[in-house]
Structure formats: structure tokens, C-alpha cells
Image 1: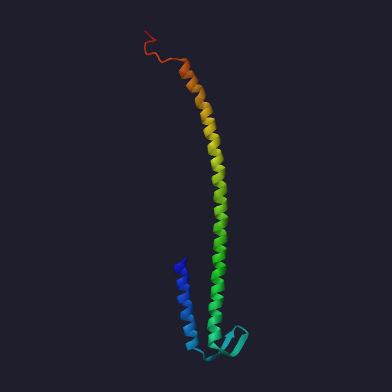
Image 2 (image 1 turned 45 degrees about the vertical axis):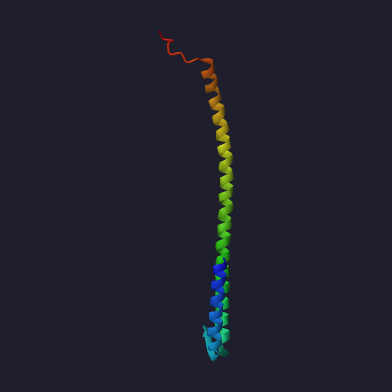
Length: 113
């Protein structure tokens, strides 16, 4: 997390330096929309801000999907744990008669003689 923060800070400083060094006035045209004589600093910062917002939204969507997946995995794990407990109890019940039969019948190797 700290590495990401440091990299974001370095990138922000680089963008700010680039913007300040290119402070000339420019005309912007996007489809039918026009801005005349706007400072390039505003354009650069605006573009960087829109990029950060887009990256944040994509990250948030990814985080929400991961949280949903984690919830479903936890639910499935709990369900499987309950099933394992049930099957273990059932197995113990099935093993108990076998133990009782072995105790009732002594194992004699000489019975057939």
C-alpha cells in the first residue's frame, strides 16, 4: 500500500511539473464543444483528474465484485462445513454397530476345527 502511495505521489509531482512548464493558451475542440484560449495547465490537470476518477471507479467495481465473490465463498464454505459435520455423525452411527458386533463375536481362529 505504501509503495502505491509513493508512486502516486511521484506521478502527481511529474504531472504538476509538466503542467506548469506548459502553461500556454490553447484551443480545445471535442466533437461539437469548443473552448478557446484555455490554459494548458487546466487541460492537463483536468485530464489527470478524469483519469484518476475513472481508475477509482474501475477499482471500486473490481473491489465490489471481489467482496461479492468472497461472501459467496464464505457461504459455500459454511454449507460444506455443516455437510461434513452431518456426514461425520452419520459415519460414527454406522461404525457403532460394527464395533458392537466385534465385541459380541470373539475372533477365534480355531472355530472351524
